[in-house]
Length: 447
Image 1 (cartoon, rainbow, N blue to C red):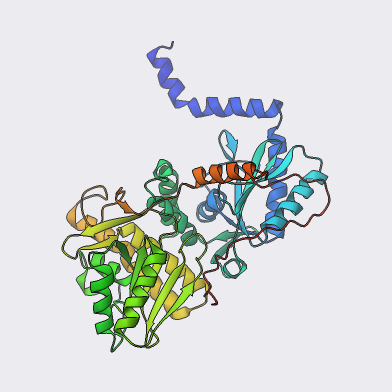
Image 2 (cartoon, helix red, strand yellow):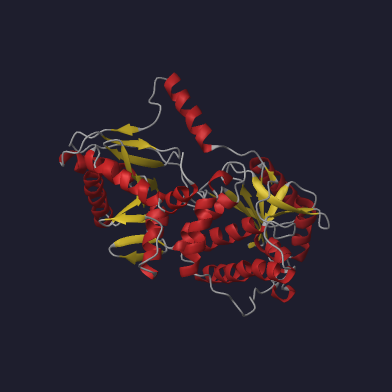
């Protein structure tokens, strides 16, 4: 087909060849690049005016360029982001997504754009807006108590999610081998770059957690009867110490309570409560709604009003673990434990609990670098067998594939003569759309 010297020059210039062809097509055929740019900027202005919080690739692009104008995630044409060959969609959080659907689609309709439609995404609380067959933006429902207290960075009129909050979604992928490893490259590549510009600080001082008196007998009982040789996965301070001890024993902390993930939550929490109540006086529980997409429903157990145990639902995930033969215990993998430290940090940040926000930030800083120090000392990689090994396929619990669930739910709706998925097409008039969202505030359940 080609000479060797031609192949060399083609390979060097292949991106230019492709981009020129795409630009030629988009200059001549509908929807044109000029329409792409016009619609994109209209949606950008809407996001700014409504003060929506952006996340995902567009926010990451802005955050990186804020630190280095020559770097970024996407290619820009007239300030519009392209992920060739397609336009890069914008993503934002909203505490009133149905109002955004009506307002934004009507805005585009009144400006005479064609084929405007809002559709429910694979995730049941996310939506996409299409104009002339192109998906321009995705947005997701976020409860107002979380939305109003987010960690943000303002850049050029956009309210960006803090990069560490977006790190939560990257770690969800790293901790989901069964249905997310097919998309590993994107979060790894992007967040290596993000963390270069927004590094996690290394904490040199020792973390001090005062030991709580008069609870040792309760903690020993919990560990013996609900953790040792049980199919629960340990996170929190016990798991923190399990890993920290491997490299920096002096940085271990006092353990005043245990955190465990249950794969049979409803059965386990009742059984635990019954046993604790029979063994000890003054046991009470506090139940919590899930905390957004991050922490499942949970129960806290208090002894004499002191927190001693927290049990968390697996939240439709097959939960990755490292099994300790010595302790006969399932510990979360290093990445899983780190992810839950991040979850807790943001839970306390959003709920304005300064003591625990500061504490979990320090735990994150120590824990993050413990793996790096261990791998450097042993001269091994994250793929080598060690307590800090990443990308394990070992997990407990049944995982729910959102794509499959979305399809099955839609089919069942069709059988019941309902719409397969939510859709909305504007006609220029204001409409009231109602939708019931589950409580994912992370707040205490009122009995």
